[in-house]
Image (cartoon, rainbow, N blue to C red):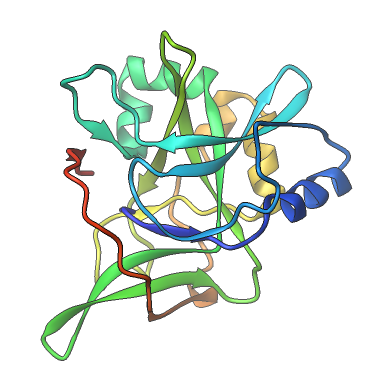
Amino acid sequence: MCYGFETKIEAAILIRKLLEKKYNIEAKELDESFKKTNIRPNDKILCVYKEGNKLQISLVKWGIKFGKDKPNIVNSRSETIKEKKFWNDLFTNNRCLVPMTSFYEWIEVDGRKVQHKIFIYNEEYFFVPGIMYRDKEDNLSVSIITTTPNEFIEPFHNRMPVLLELDEALQFLDESAKESLKRLRPYPHSIKMRKEIAVLPIRKKKATEVKKD
């Protein structure tokens, strides 16, 4: 599960990494110096997706709402995507990637919950697969995909984001939806994962309805 994360890699650096992989890239209304800590639902986040033979990099809203009075879906379960036609169709046509440097979880320490950063050791960044949605006004939003926990996450949570390193993430976008579905699994390299107490800037609370995973 993920209700907060950070993206401390600048968009310009991410674009350079993708250019090294020989991709055609188009950045839409993007501040190339964008990087952010303490990202929360409804914030703008970096999103990578394909249009034709190009990779698009844009800032989109985190959380999909299918109507004014509908919940804000920030996480989508991999099981739901595989089992329900509506979500499977959305996944087939609207796969995307959200770059992150860490995500946050509340972990019990000495009898109280303390927010921690979760990251991959020796990896500058990673990608979380997502589903993108375009509404009637052409606004883009994204829901990130979660799965069952691996050995590292299991002691403190029953869900985790799907985590992909660069090459696998790009394959996720390039291959068929049937093959991409196979990548919606727990991160296999538990030994590479680390956690540390998160020191985050204080944010004003927003009255936001979030659909829990």
